[in-house]
Image (cartoon, rainbow, N blue to C red; front, side, top):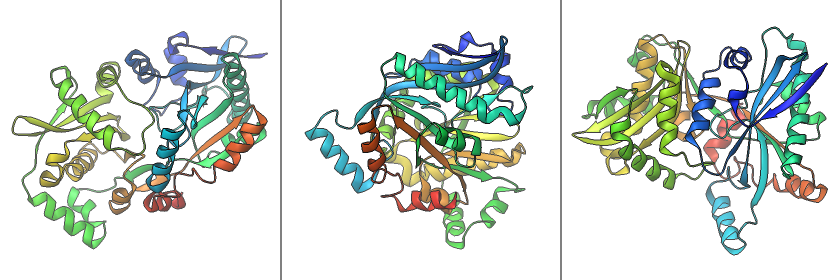
Length: 374
């Protein structure tokens, strides 16, 4: 007999049992403990689990928040929705219960290693049903699956059977790194990009420092983070200082923060996760006053590519932003899909119509190109 439960903390589930469901995921049990400890404002965490005779079969993280419907809108569309928000405060906000995480790029729903893959679709359906019931208990009408991999047919079939609508979400950029040197990587790029990057490399660069403890520079890191957040068009959450320190503490050798210095001034930082197979770029922030002179974004990019080459890491996972640059830099893109449904039939119909206008690729040609690639 199978049963489902919803927990408010991941520590209600054994670390080994959770990680057994995600054998190749860096954002595992320890990562979600770090996220919990960071106490990110405006989010409540839920963890859904399916058991059979007391044995864990499948799990998924989930969260609750007040969601702005224009979160993934940019350009002209964003300016319109911002004006609407000023005229009608709260018009674009709905209570949301979502499977997935605001601080993970894809919805991590996994099944235990002893469970046949043929059962995965049915288990995802049970997780969706558990999410709907849990959301109802909290009085939340809008249910979603945030960033399910587009090629995951089990997710698509389960969400369709549950009556959820689909919407393209922000694609994830990845760079395969089969190169023997940075020069070989540059040789794989277009002529103008290759020439531009080599010119940038000839200019004096910042000093680079790899750290696992950032307590002494945390105020400077938050200054850079807040400045970058203020410039970003697409942002779901604001990370507190505790997020950066907790990720480094909980994941130990699997997390690192790269600092970029000009003289004694911190001008950029890059928080990343790593294992022998991949390097995951979690957050990059920089000081715009120094960016042009020192080419901070491209310097950090080449630093990361060089790290992958040096450590024989095959894949650099580089996030859900900056699509124009990532297209030039040779990235591939993995599609993500947002599934959603509101239990109120009228609101559900409104959202179904509205999705045509709030697609993230409508106002960003580079993002549209990245989505079309997937």
